[in-house]
Amino acid sequence: MVAEEVLTVSELSVMKCGEALLLLLSGYVVVCQFQSGQCNRQFHFVTQSKTWTEAQLYCREKYTDLATFTSKDETMAAQRLVGSQKFWIGLFRVWQWSYTGTGKSTFTNWGTGEPGVGKCVTVSALGFWSTRDCSEEKHFICYSGDAGRYILVQDSRSFHGARSYCRERYTDLSTVNSVVNNTEIVTLLASDMYDSYSVNGNRWLIPSLSYAWIGLSNSWEWSDGSDVQLLPLTLQSGDGDCVMVDQSSSSLLFQPCDNTHPFLCYQGESVLTVTAEPDPPGLIGLLFLCRCSNSSVAAQREGSAESGLCRPERPRSA
Image (tube, rainbow, N blue to C red; front, top):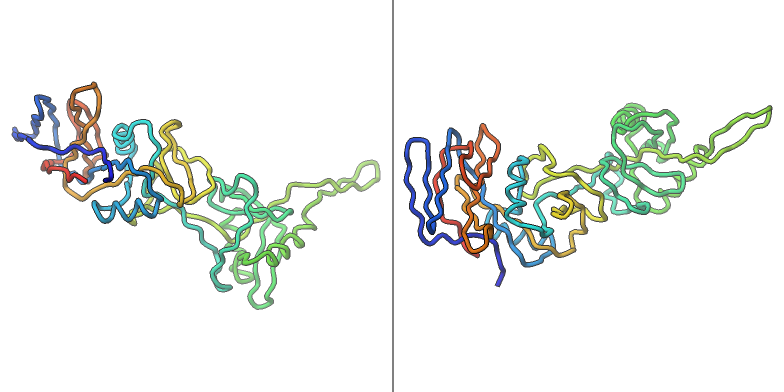
């Protein structure tokens, strides 16, 4: 049986007074003030460990999907529900080549500790790949489909500037399909490996850390197809493409999608979430997660939450 952190509401009295919604549950009273819009998100924390894909399937079968966060307030509310554990959410990374005319490529040659958190990819003069901020200016490798070869452009541009240059003059930024292709690029970069200096009439070649853009980049997507408008927490590098929340550092961490972790689902639209929290011990806490069309999520243990007129709905049990 899969264990989930979600409150099963057995008795719920609701009284609407103007713009106030009064909830009485097991003697615990909470009042939320609502203004306009409509609430729409309910989280379910599943303590059983699954791979990211298995967790996605489970959430889609029982609820809506793996958790999507649309604001920092919503993220903080979910963190309070989960506690100190690490857990999967619906965020993942998708890799794409600028030019796909040479066929789909699955070849990679990442350096130690890569890929990092950057969204665009460089290759070093030693042939190892690394992620960088796309705005950094680097030399770059174009691909000419007509000539069937790579071209090293020794002009520093951002990733997007390099891509525009390659598309205007050749075919596109380079796609690297194999060790053979990677070796061809390393050979081109050999001329870029050394900086030339003249001292007292003598010419010296000093090894340089040469990196050049290739046509690989990544983007972030939510499992439910929502736009990634913001990253709810700081992103840390890791050796995978699926994202988990690391509560110990309050950050997002890339992990291999085949690793197993607990996970967070979300459910449906137009519901007021009522979730158990073990604080204080022996008492039932209430956590309200309301997101409205004109307001960010507000999570309050007591007091008010600026949000929409909500209709309480009994959460489903696992």
